[in-house]
Image 1 (cartoon, rainbow, N blue to C red):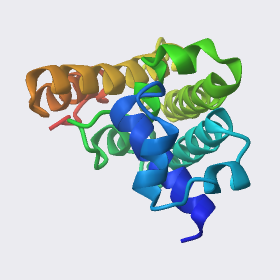
Image 2: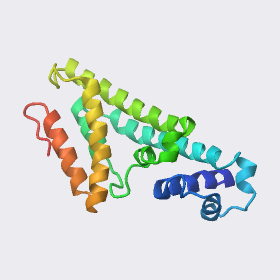
Image 3: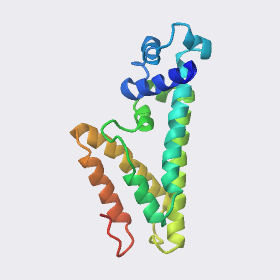
Image 4: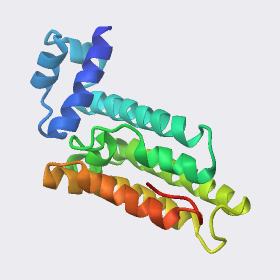
Length: 190
């Protein structure tokens, strides 16, 4: 892994663990095993490196979500696969956590990849709901955008509940509850 890659990966981990303020250039360099001048050789400074790290995190979330949302199965099964996909629930969502960081939210540049990713996710899920309505799998009265917002809110809120309780059970309960509301007749949400 190149020095710039190690710097990006270290910054991603530190942002997830500590937030923007807690991610000092010194901590980044130590975690990356990089020399003092390497950050400024590859990046303009901490904001530039943080932006590269946030963009990478957003790209990875889109790839992981897209893999199940674009995968096999009915619209319900693809939404279920997204909700049940492997996650480090107690660690929280690396993108969602950024929305809680006042320094990221205050910066249009740092917030943009986060906002774009959440928009992409809602749009993708809304499209799947509309597909399910056309196929008769979901009730015609469902609003794709509202369901998509509920799916994203369930995942992000599930992370908060799980972290607060120290157990993934609250996340899992939220997922099961939402799936039972979305389940087509005769389909067991498990």
